[in-house]
Length: 506
Image 1: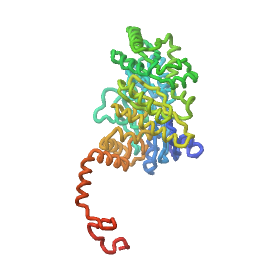
Image 2: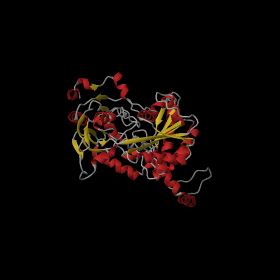
Image 3: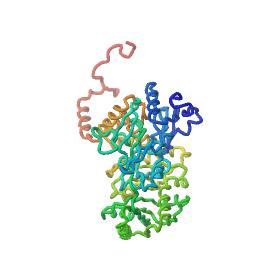
Image 4: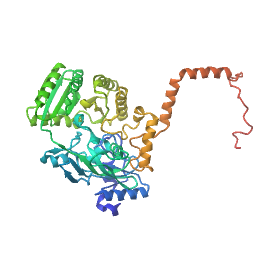
Protein backbone atom coordinates (compact mmCIF):
# COMPACT_ATOMS: atom_id res chain seq x y z
CA UNK A 1 0.00 0.00 0.00
CA UNK A 2 2.91 2.34 0.67
CA UNK A 3 3.99 1.84 -2.94
CA UNK A 4 0.49 2.93 -4.08
CA UNK A 5 -0.12 6.00 -1.90
CA UNK A 6 3.31 6.81 -0.47
CA UNK A 7 4.82 5.90 2.89
CA UNK A 8 3.49 9.04 4.54
CA UNK A 9 -0.10 8.04 3.72
CA UNK A 10 -0.14 4.72 5.57
CA UNK A 11 -0.50 4.37 9.35
CA UNK A 12 0.30 1.03 10.95
CA UNK A 13 1.88 1.90 14.31
CA UNK A 14 -0.41 0.65 17.14
CA UNK A 15 -0.25 3.86 19.18
CA UNK A 16 -1.47 5.85 16.15
CA UNK A 17 -4.25 3.41 15.30
CA UNK A 18 -6.13 3.81 18.59
CA UNK A 19 -8.03 6.90 17.43
CA UNK A 20 -9.60 4.77 14.67
CA UNK A 21 -10.93 2.10 17.04
CA UNK A 22 -14.41 3.62 16.96
CA UNK A 23 -16.48 6.35 15.36
CA UNK A 24 -19.22 8.47 16.98
CA UNK A 25 -20.68 5.27 18.47
CA UNK A 26 -18.34 4.60 21.37
CA UNK A 27 -20.08 1.69 23.09
CA UNK A 28 -17.88 -0.77 21.12
CA UNK A 29 -14.29 -0.48 19.92
CA UNK A 30 -11.86 -2.58 17.84
CA UNK A 31 -8.41 -1.94 16.40
CA UNK A 32 -7.84 -1.64 12.64
CA UNK A 33 -4.97 -3.39 10.86
CA UNK A 34 -3.82 -0.15 9.24
CA UNK A 35 -5.13 3.17 7.91
CA UNK A 36 -4.45 4.30 4.35
CA UNK A 37 -5.09 7.76 2.84
CA UNK A 38 -5.62 7.66 -0.95
CA UNK A 39 -5.73 10.93 -2.86
CA UNK A 40 -7.98 10.16 -5.84
CA UNK A 41 -10.15 7.53 -7.51
CA UNK A 42 -7.20 5.72 -9.10
CA UNK A 43 -5.44 5.31 -5.76
CA UNK A 44 -8.64 4.10 -4.05
CA UNK A 45 -9.15 1.55 -6.82
CA UNK A 46 -5.52 0.38 -6.64
CA UNK A 47 -5.65 -0.01 -2.84
CA UNK A 48 -8.93 -1.94 -3.04
CA UNK A 49 -7.59 -4.22 -5.80
CA UNK A 50 -4.52 -5.03 -3.68
CA UNK A 51 -6.63 -5.77 -0.60
CA UNK A 52 -9.04 -7.87 -2.65
CA UNK A 53 -6.19 -9.90 -4.15
CA UNK A 54 -4.81 -10.61 -0.68
CA UNK A 55 -8.26 -11.28 0.84
CA UNK A 56 -7.77 -8.59 3.47
CA UNK A 57 -10.96 -6.98 4.89
CA UNK A 58 -11.33 -3.21 4.57
CA UNK A 59 -13.81 -0.40 5.14
CA UNK A 60 -14.18 3.23 4.04
CA UNK A 61 -14.26 6.04 6.60
CA UNK A 62 -15.01 9.75 6.39
CA UNK A 63 -14.79 12.06 9.41
CA UNK A 64 -15.79 9.29 11.83
CA UNK A 65 -18.89 11.16 13.01
CA UNK A 66 -21.23 8.24 12.26
CA UNK A 67 -23.42 7.37 15.24
CA UNK A 68 -24.21 3.70 14.61
CA UNK A 69 -20.73 2.16 14.47
CA UNK A 70 -20.55 1.79 10.69
CA UNK A 71 -16.82 2.63 10.62
CA UNK A 72 -15.70 0.45 13.55
CA UNK A 73 -13.15 -2.17 12.32
CA UNK A 74 -14.66 -5.26 13.93
CA UNK A 75 -12.66 -7.66 11.74
CA UNK A 76 -9.25 -6.02 11.87
CA UNK A 77 -9.94 -4.16 8.65
CA UNK A 78 -7.66 -1.79 6.80
CA UNK A 79 -9.41 1.58 7.04
CA UNK A 80 -9.47 3.53 3.80
CA UNK A 81 -9.72 7.10 5.06
CA UNK A 82 -11.12 9.56 2.52
CA UNK A 83 -10.49 12.76 4.48
CA UNK A 84 -7.65 13.85 2.17
CA UNK A 85 -9.98 13.61 -0.83
CA UNK A 86 -11.68 16.91 0.03
CA UNK A 87 -11.70 18.93 -3.19
CA UNK A 88 -14.62 20.77 -4.73
CA UNK A 89 -13.90 19.53 -8.25
CA UNK A 90 -16.35 21.69 -10.21
CA UNK A 91 -19.48 23.84 -9.90
CA UNK A 92 -22.15 24.39 -12.55
CA UNK A 93 -24.35 27.20 -11.21
CA UNK A 94 -26.51 27.34 -14.35
CA UNK A 95 -27.48 23.68 -13.98
CA UNK A 96 -27.36 23.64 -10.15
CA UNK A 97 -24.74 20.90 -9.88
CA UNK A 98 -21.43 20.48 -8.06
CA UNK A 99 -18.92 17.61 -8.19
CA UNK A 100 -17.06 16.90 -4.97
CA UNK A 101 -14.65 14.37 -3.53
CA UNK A 102 -16.10 12.29 -0.66
CA UNK A 103 -13.94 13.89 2.04
CA UNK A 104 -15.31 17.39 1.50
CA UNK A 105 -16.97 18.59 4.70
CA UNK A 106 -20.70 19.20 4.27
CA UNK A 107 -20.71 22.81 5.46
CA UNK A 108 -17.55 23.62 3.50
CA UNK A 109 -19.43 23.10 0.24
CA UNK A 110 -22.04 25.66 1.26
CA UNK A 111 -19.35 28.11 2.39
CA UNK A 112 -17.57 27.80 -0.96
CA UNK A 113 -20.69 28.65 -3.00
CA UNK A 114 -22.70 30.87 -0.68
CA UNK A 115 -21.00 34.00 -2.04
CA UNK A 116 -22.77 33.30 -5.31
CA UNK A 117 -26.10 32.88 -3.51
CA UNK A 118 -26.21 29.06 -3.47
CA UNK A 119 -26.04 26.31 -0.84
CA UNK A 120 -26.15 22.54 -0.28
CA UNK A 121 -29.41 21.62 1.49
CA UNK A 122 -28.76 18.46 3.61
CA UNK A 123 -27.67 19.79 7.01
CA UNK A 124 -27.07 17.16 9.71
CA UNK A 125 -26.21 18.64 13.09
CA UNK A 126 -22.61 17.53 12.50
CA UNK A 127 -22.43 19.42 9.19
CA UNK A 128 -19.45 21.48 10.32
CA UNK A 129 -17.31 18.32 10.48
CA UNK A 130 -19.07 15.43 8.69
CA UNK A 131 -18.18 14.62 5.08
CA UNK A 132 -20.42 14.35 2.03
CA UNK A 133 -19.09 10.84 1.38
CA UNK A 134 -20.15 9.84 4.88
CA UNK A 135 -23.53 11.50 4.33
CA UNK A 136 -23.92 9.38 1.18
CA UNK A 137 -23.02 6.18 3.03
CA UNK A 138 -25.54 6.83 5.81
CA UNK A 139 -28.15 8.71 3.75
CA UNK A 140 -27.91 11.51 6.29
CA UNK A 141 -30.76 13.90 6.91
CA UNK A 142 -30.81 17.09 8.90
CA UNK A 143 -32.99 19.79 10.31
CA UNK A 144 -34.32 20.96 6.95
CA UNK A 145 -35.11 17.55 5.44
CA UNK A 146 -38.79 18.10 6.26
CA UNK A 147 -39.04 20.35 3.21
CA UNK A 148 -35.91 19.53 1.21
CA UNK A 149 -35.43 15.78 1.72
CA UNK A 150 -32.44 13.72 2.84
CA UNK A 151 -29.12 13.05 1.09
CA UNK A 152 -30.55 10.66 -1.48
CA UNK A 153 -32.68 13.52 -2.84
CA UNK A 154 -29.56 15.62 -3.51
CA UNK A 155 -27.08 13.17 -5.06
CA UNK A 156 -27.54 12.51 -8.76
CA UNK A 157 -24.39 10.62 -9.81
CA UNK A 158 -21.18 9.13 -8.45
CA UNK A 159 -17.96 7.45 -9.45
CA UNK A 160 -17.87 4.24 -7.44
CA UNK A 161 -15.15 1.69 -6.66
CA UNK A 162 -16.49 -1.85 -6.28
CA UNK A 163 -15.01 -4.20 -3.63
CA UNK A 164 -12.79 -5.84 -6.28
CA UNK A 165 -11.36 -2.50 -7.45
CA UNK A 166 -13.46 -2.02 -10.59
CA UNK A 167 -14.68 1.56 -11.12
CA UNK A 168 -18.30 2.34 -12.08
CA UNK A 169 -20.11 5.51 -13.06
CA UNK A 170 -23.58 5.34 -11.53
CA UNK A 171 -26.57 7.66 -11.71
CA UNK A 172 -26.85 10.55 -14.15
CA UNK A 173 -25.99 14.23 -13.67
CA UNK A 174 -29.14 15.15 -15.57
CA UNK A 175 -32.35 13.25 -16.12
CA UNK A 176 -33.22 9.87 -14.70
CA UNK A 177 -30.67 7.06 -15.20
CA UNK A 178 -31.66 4.17 -17.44
CA UNK A 179 -31.80 0.65 -16.06
CA UNK A 180 -31.52 -0.42 -12.44
CA UNK A 181 -31.20 2.37 -9.89
CA UNK A 182 -27.70 1.42 -8.70
CA UNK A 183 -27.14 4.89 -7.26
CA UNK A 184 -30.26 4.34 -5.15
CA UNK A 185 -28.71 1.13 -3.78
CA UNK A 186 -25.42 2.81 -3.00
CA UNK A 187 -26.83 5.77 -1.07
CA UNK A 188 -27.43 4.48 2.45
CA UNK A 189 -25.54 1.20 1.90
CA UNK A 190 -23.18 2.09 4.77
CA UNK A 191 -20.01 1.21 2.91
CA UNK A 192 -20.99 -2.42 2.34
CA UNK A 193 -21.19 -2.22 -1.48
CA UNK A 194 -18.08 -0.19 -2.30
CA UNK A 195 -16.61 3.32 -2.06
CA UNK A 196 -17.86 6.55 -3.70
CA UNK A 197 -14.90 8.63 -4.88
CA UNK A 198 -16.54 11.47 -6.84
CA UNK A 199 -20.05 12.67 -6.04
CA UNK A 200 -22.30 14.91 -8.14
CA UNK A 201 -24.79 16.80 -5.96
CA UNK A 202 -27.65 19.20 -6.51
CA UNK A 203 -27.11 22.71 -5.19
CA UNK A 204 -29.91 25.18 -4.50
CA UNK A 205 -30.40 28.93 -4.74
CA UNK A 206 -30.69 30.43 -1.28
CA UNK A 207 -34.30 31.26 -0.37
CA UNK A 208 -35.26 34.91 -0.65
CA UNK A 209 -36.40 35.18 2.95
CA UNK A 210 -36.49 33.17 6.20
CA UNK A 211 -38.68 33.43 9.30
CA UNK A 212 -37.88 31.48 12.47
CA UNK A 213 -40.08 31.10 15.55
CA UNK A 214 -39.27 29.77 19.03
CA UNK A 215 -42.26 28.35 20.92
CA UNK A 216 -42.16 27.17 24.55
CA UNK A 217 -44.75 24.76 25.92
CA UNK A 218 -45.71 23.72 29.43
CA UNK A 219 -46.64 20.26 28.16
CA UNK A 220 -45.02 17.96 25.59
CA UNK A 221 -48.49 16.99 24.40
CA UNK A 222 -49.28 20.57 23.37
CA UNK A 223 -45.99 20.87 21.48
CA UNK A 224 -46.64 17.56 19.71
CA UNK A 225 -50.17 18.61 18.75
CA UNK A 226 -48.77 21.88 17.38
CA UNK A 227 -46.48 19.99 14.99
CA UNK A 228 -49.38 18.07 13.47
CA UNK A 229 -51.59 21.17 13.40
CA UNK A 230 -49.03 23.19 11.40
CA UNK A 231 -48.68 20.45 8.77
CA UNK A 232 -52.44 19.91 8.82
CA UNK A 233 -52.98 23.60 8.06
CA UNK A 234 -51.17 23.13 4.75
CA UNK A 235 -47.94 24.83 5.84
CA UNK A 236 -44.73 22.90 5.06
CA UNK A 237 -42.01 24.57 7.13
CA UNK A 238 -38.37 24.14 6.23
CA UNK A 239 -37.87 22.73 9.72
CA UNK A 240 -39.69 21.89 12.95
CA UNK A 241 -37.30 20.86 15.74
CA UNK A 242 -38.14 19.88 19.32
CA UNK A 243 -36.12 19.67 22.54
CA UNK A 244 -37.31 18.48 25.94
CA UNK A 245 -36.39 19.91 29.33
CA UNK A 246 -33.27 17.75 29.93
CA UNK A 247 -31.84 18.76 26.54
CA UNK A 248 -32.63 22.42 27.25
CA UNK A 249 -30.88 22.24 30.60
CA UNK A 250 -27.77 20.78 28.99
CA UNK A 251 -27.48 23.25 26.14
CA UNK A 252 -28.23 26.23 28.37
CA UNK A 253 -25.08 25.33 30.35
CA UNK A 254 -23.02 25.58 27.16
CA UNK A 255 -21.83 28.57 25.14
CA UNK A 256 -25.21 28.72 23.41
CA UNK A 257 -27.29 29.87 26.37
CA UNK A 258 -30.80 30.86 25.36
CA UNK A 259 -32.39 31.02 28.82
CA UNK A 260 -35.06 28.36 28.56
CA UNK A 261 -37.44 28.34 31.56
CA UNK A 262 -36.77 25.41 33.88
CA UNK A 263 -40.46 24.59 34.26
CA UNK A 264 -41.46 24.02 30.62
CA UNK A 265 -41.53 20.54 29.08
CA UNK A 266 -40.77 21.29 25.42
CA UNK A 267 -39.56 23.93 22.98
CA UNK A 268 -40.20 24.03 19.22
CA UNK A 269 -37.97 25.75 16.68
CA UNK A 270 -40.06 26.36 13.56
CA UNK A 271 -38.68 27.83 10.35
CA UNK A 272 -40.33 28.78 7.06
CA UNK A 273 -38.45 30.00 3.99
CA UNK A 274 -39.05 30.90 0.35
CA UNK A 275 -40.25 34.00 -1.47
CA UNK A 276 -40.54 37.04 0.77
CA UNK A 277 -44.12 37.64 -0.35
CA UNK A 278 -46.42 35.65 1.90
CA UNK A 279 -43.78 34.59 4.41
CA UNK A 280 -44.95 37.09 7.04
CA UNK A 281 -48.41 35.61 6.69
CA UNK A 282 -47.09 32.05 7.18
CA UNK A 283 -45.19 33.12 10.31
CA UNK A 284 -48.32 34.77 11.70
CA UNK A 285 -50.37 31.62 11.06
CA UNK A 286 -47.75 29.52 12.86
CA UNK A 287 -47.86 31.83 15.88
CA UNK A 288 -51.65 31.57 15.85
CA UNK A 289 -51.52 27.74 15.73
CA UNK A 290 -49.07 27.70 18.66
CA UNK A 291 -51.45 29.87 20.67
CA UNK A 292 -54.37 27.60 19.84
CA UNK A 293 -52.32 24.76 21.35
CA UNK A 294 -51.66 26.48 24.68
CA UNK A 295 -48.12 27.74 24.03
CA UNK A 296 -46.66 29.65 26.99
CA UNK A 297 -44.59 32.00 24.84
CA UNK A 298 -43.86 32.19 21.10
CA UNK A 299 -41.56 34.65 19.38
CA UNK A 300 -40.33 35.26 15.84
CA UNK A 301 -36.59 36.01 15.62
CA UNK A 302 -35.94 39.75 15.39
CA UNK A 303 -32.69 39.43 13.44
CA UNK A 304 -30.12 36.97 12.06
CA UNK A 305 -28.14 37.00 15.30
CA UNK A 306 -31.10 35.81 17.36
CA UNK A 307 -31.99 33.20 14.76
CA UNK A 308 -28.37 31.97 14.69
CA UNK A 309 -28.33 31.63 18.50
CA UNK A 310 -31.50 29.54 18.47
CA UNK A 311 -30.13 27.27 15.76
CA UNK A 312 -26.76 26.92 17.48
CA UNK A 313 -28.59 25.94 20.66
CA UNK A 314 -30.43 23.20 18.78
CA UNK A 315 -27.49 21.95 16.70
CA UNK A 316 -25.07 21.81 19.63
CA UNK A 317 -27.52 20.03 21.93
CA UNK A 318 -26.03 16.56 21.30
CA UNK A 319 -22.58 17.66 22.40
CA UNK A 320 -24.01 19.60 25.33
CA UNK A 321 -25.44 16.40 26.82
CA UNK A 322 -21.85 15.65 27.83
CA UNK A 323 -22.34 18.31 30.50
CA UNK A 324 -25.01 16.24 32.26
CA UNK A 325 -23.86 12.67 31.53
CA UNK A 326 -20.41 11.07 31.03
CA UNK A 327 -21.71 8.84 28.19
CA UNK A 328 -24.78 8.68 25.99
CA UNK A 329 -26.14 6.78 22.98
CA UNK A 330 -27.92 8.76 20.27
CA UNK A 331 -30.90 6.76 19.03
CA UNK A 332 -32.56 7.40 15.68
CA UNK A 333 -36.09 6.04 15.32
CA UNK A 334 -38.83 7.33 13.05
CA UNK A 335 -42.55 7.42 13.81
CA UNK A 336 -45.70 8.89 12.26
CA UNK A 337 -45.70 12.44 13.68
CA UNK A 338 -49.33 12.00 14.78
CA UNK A 339 -48.05 9.39 17.31
CA UNK A 340 -45.52 11.79 18.90
CA UNK A 341 -47.34 12.23 22.19
CA UNK A 342 -47.82 8.54 22.96
CA UNK A 343 -44.29 7.56 21.84
CA UNK A 344 -42.66 10.27 23.94
CA UNK A 345 -44.77 9.09 26.89
CA UNK A 346 -43.57 5.52 26.34
CA UNK A 347 -39.95 6.73 26.18
CA UNK A 348 -40.50 8.47 29.52
CA UNK A 349 -41.78 5.18 30.96
CA UNK A 350 -38.77 3.27 29.58
CA UNK A 351 -36.48 5.85 31.17
CA UNK A 352 -38.20 5.47 34.53
CA UNK A 353 -38.21 1.66 34.38
CA UNK A 354 -34.52 1.46 33.42
CA UNK A 355 -33.28 4.19 35.72
CA UNK A 356 -31.42 5.83 32.80
CA UNK A 357 -32.15 9.45 31.93
CA UNK A 358 -33.26 10.03 28.32
CA UNK A 359 -33.13 13.47 26.68
CA UNK A 360 -35.04 14.13 23.47
CA UNK A 361 -33.71 16.37 20.68
CA UNK A 362 -35.23 15.66 17.31
CA UNK A 363 -36.72 16.54 13.94
CA UNK A 364 -40.36 16.67 15.01
CA UNK A 365 -41.66 17.71 11.61
CA UNK A 366 -40.78 14.42 9.95
CA UNK A 367 -41.11 12.25 13.06
CA UNK A 368 -37.37 11.50 13.29
CA UNK A 369 -36.69 10.98 17.00
CA UNK A 370 -33.28 11.26 18.64
CA UNK A 371 -33.58 9.98 22.22
CA UNK A 372 -30.22 10.48 23.94
CA UNK A 373 -29.80 7.61 26.41
CA UNK A 374 -27.54 8.75 29.23
CA UNK A 375 -25.32 6.25 31.06
CA UNK A 376 -22.00 5.87 32.81
CA UNK A 377 -19.67 3.31 31.22
CA UNK A 378 -17.63 3.20 34.43
CA UNK A 379 -20.53 1.40 36.16
CA UNK A 380 -20.40 -2.34 35.35
CA UNK A 381 -23.31 -3.39 33.15
CA UNK A 382 -24.61 0.11 32.46
CA UNK A 383 -23.35 0.21 28.85
CA UNK A 384 -25.19 -3.02 28.11
CA UNK A 385 -28.29 -1.63 29.80
CA UNK A 386 -28.16 1.51 27.66
CA UNK A 387 -27.93 -0.63 24.51
CA UNK A 388 -30.98 -2.65 25.63
CA UNK A 389 -32.90 0.54 26.35
CA UNK A 390 -32.07 1.75 22.84
CA UNK A 391 -33.57 -1.41 21.38
CA UNK A 392 -36.71 -1.00 23.49
CA UNK A 393 -37.17 2.52 22.14
CA UNK A 394 -36.73 1.34 18.55
CA UNK A 395 -39.27 -1.44 19.05
CA UNK A 396 -41.80 1.16 20.19
CA UNK A 397 -41.11 3.08 16.95
CA UNK A 398 -41.68 -0.03 14.83
CA UNK A 399 -44.81 -0.96 16.77
CA UNK A 400 -46.50 2.36 15.88
CA UNK A 401 -45.66 1.98 12.19
CA UNK A 402 -42.23 3.62 12.09
CA UNK A 403 -38.71 2.39 11.54
CA UNK A 404 -35.38 1.94 13.34
CA UNK A 405 -33.39 4.65 11.57
CA UNK A 406 -34.06 7.94 9.86
CA UNK A 407 -30.57 9.15 9.06
CA UNK A 408 -27.89 7.51 11.22
CA UNK A 409 -27.88 4.08 9.58
CA UNK A 410 -27.90 0.63 11.17
CA UNK A 411 -24.16 -0.03 11.52
CA UNK A 412 -23.53 -2.43 14.37
CA UNK A 413 -25.69 -0.55 16.85
CA UNK A 414 -29.04 -1.58 15.39
CA UNK A 415 -28.09 -4.68 13.43
CA UNK A 416 -30.10 -7.04 15.63
CA UNK A 417 -33.03 -4.62 15.59
CA UNK A 418 -33.25 -5.26 11.84
CA UNK A 419 -34.81 -8.62 12.75
CA UNK A 420 -37.60 -6.78 14.56
CA UNK A 421 -38.24 -4.57 11.53
CA UNK A 422 -37.93 -7.13 8.73
CA UNK A 423 -38.96 -10.70 8.00
CA UNK A 424 -36.29 -13.27 7.10
CA UNK A 425 -37.29 -13.16 3.45
CA UNK A 426 -36.74 -9.39 3.41
CA UNK A 427 -33.30 -9.79 4.97
CA UNK A 428 -32.35 -12.54 2.53
CA UNK A 429 -33.17 -10.23 -0.38
CA UNK A 430 -30.85 -7.59 1.06
CA UNK A 431 -28.10 -10.16 1.65
CA UNK A 432 -28.41 -11.24 -1.99
CA UNK A 433 -27.83 -7.65 -3.14
CA UNK A 434 -24.79 -7.29 -0.88
CA UNK A 435 -23.39 -10.60 -2.16
CA UNK A 436 -23.77 -9.46 -5.78
CA UNK A 437 -21.58 -6.41 -5.14
CA UNK A 438 -19.41 -7.80 -2.36
CA UNK A 439 -19.23 -11.60 -2.86
CA UNK A 440 -16.18 -12.14 -0.63
CA UNK A 441 -17.70 -9.92 2.09
CA UNK A 442 -14.40 -8.06 2.47
CA UNK A 443 -15.94 -4.57 2.33
CA UNK A 444 -17.27 -3.50 5.75
CA UNK A 445 -18.34 -6.97 6.77
CA UNK A 446 -20.72 -7.40 9.69
CA UNK A 447 -22.55 -4.11 9.25
CA UNK A 448 -26.11 -3.19 8.29
CA UNK A 449 -27.63 -6.64 7.65
CA UNK A 450 -27.70 -9.36 10.33
CA UNK A 451 -26.49 -12.77 9.25
CA UNK A 452 -29.23 -15.39 9.49
CA UNK A 453 -28.35 -17.52 12.45
CA UNK A 454 -29.49 -19.40 15.49
CA UNK A 455 -31.05 -16.35 17.15
CA UNK A 456 -33.43 -15.92 14.24
CA UNK A 457 -34.20 -19.63 14.23
CA UNK A 458 -34.97 -19.62 17.96
CA UNK A 459 -37.12 -16.53 17.58
CA UNK A 460 -39.03 -18.11 14.72
CA UNK A 461 -39.43 -21.35 16.64
CA UNK A 462 -40.90 -19.50 19.63
CA UNK A 463 -43.27 -17.66 17.35
CA UNK A 464 -44.32 -20.90 15.65
CA UNK A 465 -44.96 -22.62 18.98
CA UNK A 466 -46.92 -19.67 20.33
CA UNK A 467 -49.01 -19.40 17.17
CA UNK A 468 -49.81 -23.11 17.15
CA UNK A 469 -50.20 -23.76 20.86
CA UNK A 470 -53.43 -25.71 20.45
CA UNK A 471 -51.90 -27.94 17.80
CA UNK A 472 -48.94 -28.74 20.04
CA UNK A 473 -51.29 -29.49 22.94
CA UNK A 474 -53.17 -32.00 20.78
CA UNK A 475 -49.88 -33.58 19.72
CA UNK A 476 -48.94 -33.96 23.37
CA UNK A 477 -52.27 -35.68 24.06
CA UNK A 478 -51.74 -38.05 21.14
CA UNK A 479 -48.22 -38.79 22.34
CA UNK A 480 -49.52 -39.69 25.78
CA UNK A 481 -51.95 -42.21 24.25
CA UNK A 482 -49.32 -43.92 22.08
CA UNK A 483 -46.44 -43.62 24.58
CA UNK A 484 -44.94 -47.02 25.66
CA UNK A 485 -45.96 -48.25 29.10
CA UNK A 486 -43.69 -47.55 32.03
CA UNK A 487 -41.95 -50.23 34.01
CA UNK A 488 -41.82 -50.23 37.74
CA UNK A 489 -38.66 -48.22 38.13
CA UNK A 490 -40.21 -45.27 36.24
CA UNK A 491 -38.20 -45.77 33.06
CA UNK A 492 -39.99 -46.15 29.75
CA UNK A 493 -39.45 -49.21 27.72
CA UNK A 494 -37.61 -48.30 24.57
CA UNK A 495 -39.47 -48.65 21.28
CA UNK A 496 -36.60 -50.81 19.99
CA UNK A 497 -33.71 -52.40 21.77
CA UNK A 498 -30.33 -50.78 21.19
CA UNK A 499 -28.01 -52.73 18.98
CA UNK A 500 -25.44 -54.73 20.79
CA UNK A 501 -22.15 -52.98 20.94
CA UNK A 502 -23.46 -49.50 20.16
CA UNK A 503 -21.54 -46.85 22.02
CA UNK A 504 -18.53 -49.08 22.78
CA UNK A 505 -16.30 -48.14 19.96
CA UNK A 506 -17.74 -49.97 16.98
